[in-house]
Length: 347
Ligand code: 13P
Ligand code: SF4
Image: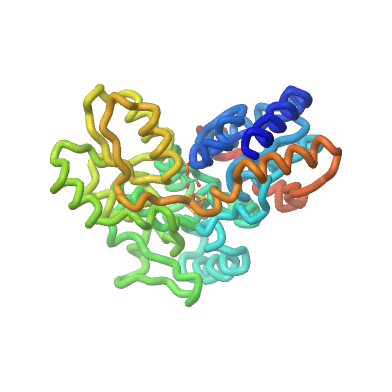
């Protein structure tokens, strides 16, 4: 039963004490978040994993790329576990290393040494490693503007992997014109751009988040019609068009802070993952808050981490069994860490 599982989790947490660390991403279910030692967005969780040197067992409640990042940033004797190996990320899966190598060699053919790669942390360790090896860095949604600015300090143009929307929204905010952005299509292995290639400043990988893609202009229009006083706030993984008609856009932590600082009685439509929106609604009974998309938008892979998987994972650790360990090979980890460190130094 739920009660039995909760009691087991509590018992094991108490028994392992500081040896166990459970980071939980804001998109995780309440049944899991209640047991998290720390909650955060992807940047905060990366930093916390790095700072925590006591934990021998890090049971990562989030998705696969986050657990990989935690492994890269922690020491040899710290083990990272993912309670369900199927907790991947469809966006991270949209850029594989072979596609990236092919893209890079074509882009270098076109642009020579004028280009630097950046990758959203929502990507595999192999992609982070590739980026680190080629002088680039990782970014998260909360530092993307700083990192894009940093990249322009290094080279004339950049390749942004794997989320075209975060890349486009960020570059646009920094004054790069939409006509200066091209799209790299990894399925066709070709650059989508009309005009002379010298004008290109940003090359956006054609990937997206299947959760944030579900927020549409029609959703914003419906809110404007039904609740004219409502503030629309969205995550920059939403499309440029949706961000353009919204009132505010920013990372997970930006959205949480905006609502926390808002006046009682204010009303909000939020365009981000469902578990987080529901939690914000519960935490702010003094405000009127709805999901921008009335059908809500769950992240199915985040939701694979649930109470039964968390319990199972902790029981295996209690038994001394090695299971669901996320281990990035040493060579990949070394270069991926270079890309992460370039970001963390600036963050
Ligand atoms: P942040 O936590 O960096 O806002 O990223 C959102 C996300 O999609 C995580 O998978
Ligand atoms: Fe990936 Fe989007 Fe889910 Fe985040 S919300 S884990 S980017 S699919």
